[in-house]
Length: 409
Image (cartoon, rainbow, N blue to C red; front, side, top):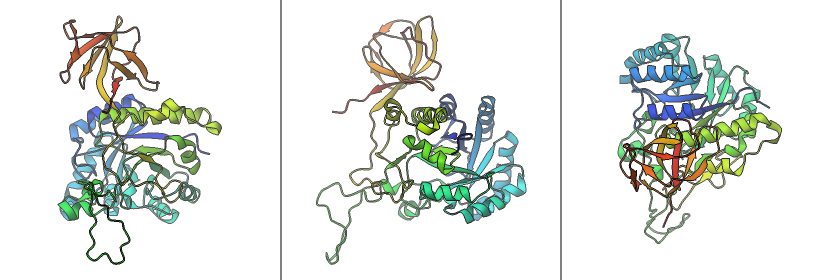
């Protein structure tokens, strides 16, 4: 049973999300630069902001892994030397690659850089794992199609110095470990170069010409069917099983998701891991902690392939997210019985809210009175980024998240 190393690895699509990951307990973050990353839509990090991110993380004892996990074309290769040397110069702790050519170039240009092999490599057996280790990899990110038994066998038949990382939470791709042609074929946006349009989430109408040998039912309604739509992955109840299988890094998906998502999910897995490390033999998280992952925007959850062939991991009714809470503000500071905040979404005096601080159970309270920046009482906080305050005897650290339940009609 593995207890000495169990890393919580969180996504950082920009500086705000980096701060959220660090504040709420990530041991390491993974982020992308302006090139070679698998997420083109987030802001990502240029040379200056990457150095800032590394320095900020290192000052708090956290690590930064840089994604270079696209499958680059010929025209992009000449740009890689400068890109990777810059990453090494600013102190990135590791680079995540999916392409064997880039692996060889990392070893050539920055031989001391730690190399992690992306899930997109499709590592499903110990022979591949050992060969990648022999080629210079320090860590392998498991293909998402592996069971815990598969991972345990790979762990048993590879050197202990080789780290094993696995995705444990977030969106899943219907294709094999993210290698998909749907987006490029349908809308000319290459999923393997960070531009996926997520056509697996679209609604499809299946048509057959003659109704002979009809194997898939034709639904007679307007909504079609979401035959490619995968549920989200959630393994927060199974930290013990992941550790026992030899996983040393628990990776949370979501570089394109909000800072609120990063805060809440990182916090939940941080507390779950700490709970496991306190008593590995009797690991069980409380209901309130499990419920935290339901308080972010998410699809229905499943456990993917970890327990064998997934029997209930597609969702055919809709591709929409479930959203039961809105983040309404972020705490700036607490002084003399007053909580000073910055607004994110509209709310009203008299609303009952929850305030989530790092490594803590959320606190529920009622905000009886909202004070604007001049100390005047107002009925609502309805301007984006509006500074406001309210009175409370409770003290919350900066960047604590204030959220409110969404009441669906």
